[in-house]
Amino acid sequence: MLTTTAPAAAKPVIHDAPPVTARRLLTGYFAGLGALMAIWGARMPAVQAAAALSAGRLSLVLLAAAAGMVAGLYAGGRIAHRHGAAALLTAPAVALAAALAALGACRTLPALIAAALVFGLAHGLLDVGANVAAVRCQDAYGRSIMSSLHAGFSLGALLGAAAAATTAHTGHARVFLIAGLGAATLALLTAPAVRNVTALATNQPDSSGGSAPELAAPGRGRAGLCLLGALAAACLLGEGAAADWSAVHLHELHTTAAVSASAYAVYSAAMATGRLAGDRLTTRYGAPALVRAGALLATAGLGTGLLVGTAWSALVGWAALGLGLSTTVPALITAAGRHGPRAVAAVTATGYVGLLAGPAAIGALASLTGSLPLALVLPVLLAAAVAAASRHALESPR
Image (cartoon, rainbow, N blue to C red):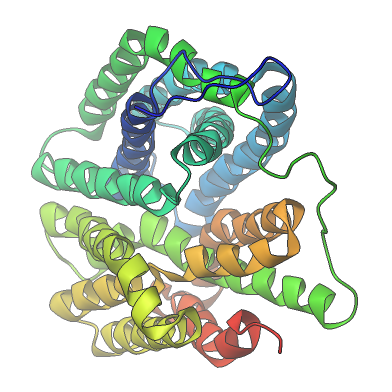
């Protein structure tokens, strides 16, 4: 347990929650968020079939979820500033679970859009709350633990996708209801612990020491931050494509429902593996070389999978995308940190543009071209762009 003693005028004392307890609970929240998002994404073909949606209409549902998440991210920042992370954990988690259950019961496009809007809003609020608490927990530890917390999201996504695959022959409405009830129950049961954990956010001093951070340095610094944000958006577009379109892609290759649902599980397993090993690999090879190699792997893997067009090549392609992109966003955030906390926030927010708008853009491209595999060339091209620009973006200026 980490304990701190100091005079009243010095740094506050953290006494309400041991950091190890906070870390376990927050890992659970990240894993639960990953699991719910994976179940939603893996059973997307069933949602599409139940409402008889074309790819273009399904993209409207995804766009509604994206719009809700943007609103949740902006509102969450204000709520966390005024009330702390406590208000952004239990209640949004319950709302997210309820929205998932509602999505399973929807059979019309307007109903799906409304439920997806709430689902995205709750997701955005919970994302802010978990990350605000995670930053404070990391401060209390005195060393980096953020990568392992986000690996919890990937592992949760893997478990959620695996659960969706094993229940592929069960109606998606029942699966969504069971998952929603389970997640809501866990959130309510852990509510007392959340109040203790969020003491980290109220008692832990600002790691910036109250000084005004530099958002963008002049000249090359400002351009560098723009490049980091663009690369983050490119990478997160690939993540969004895997979450929302990998199962649909396998379904269009005439695979079984179980194989279709397993596509995101394969992607998530590769992503989790890369994140768990990422710190050691970065230390050994350096971030620029690791990101460049990973982006090339993502480009070649998914590109080959789309070109060959078989179920097995597609699964290998999605795995290559997950492994290749696993360490990219952490490296980009680390590079942004050289310019201060506000720069990290700016790069992260830009990255969400790709995560939120990307799946809808792929749906629109699929509708225009009449081919989902052709539309999925977009994340392949963007991964190639990341490989080309990673050295310039990540190497420290001399």
